[in-house]
Length: 201
Image (cartoon, rainbow, N blue to C red):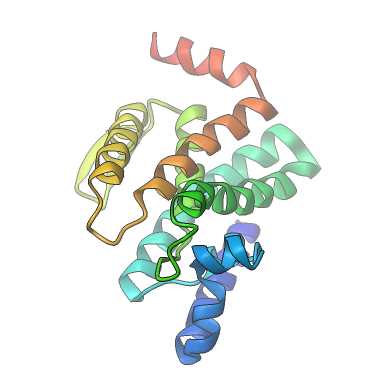
């Protein structure tokens, strides 16, 4: 869990620091206009280390603790000394990739901002489901379902809400982060798909 704890501390510390300094908070979040037109591409990743408020931060850290820790353990078991590197690579690249659809969709909107680690966290959740689809997962400790069902509901929900919009949540980042987590795992370990299917059927 060392890497997961490190990520949690980094996200929490940077978020808190940015809360005290609004100019830093603004500079780190994903402003799509500045990111695209001024080539401030670092925002694709730095936006994953700042959050709107305590609830936003807590929910991402809470999910990161459980699923990040599980993926850290799985990656170390499968990939040995490269496991931690691949885990961090998955998380950071997922944050960036999850932001890309929003970047291109909102590139000419100077008032659009997005922030939070949700894209990276979503990638970890779906990666875990791919490795262990029958493991029961509990949504906010209330609704408990096998991982593959919860994953399917999550993707469907993200698609519907992404099209509807209007709730100030970047559902596209959730969706594309989740899909990227699946692709990342299948590139690293293609046999995971066969195992996933055989587990279900």
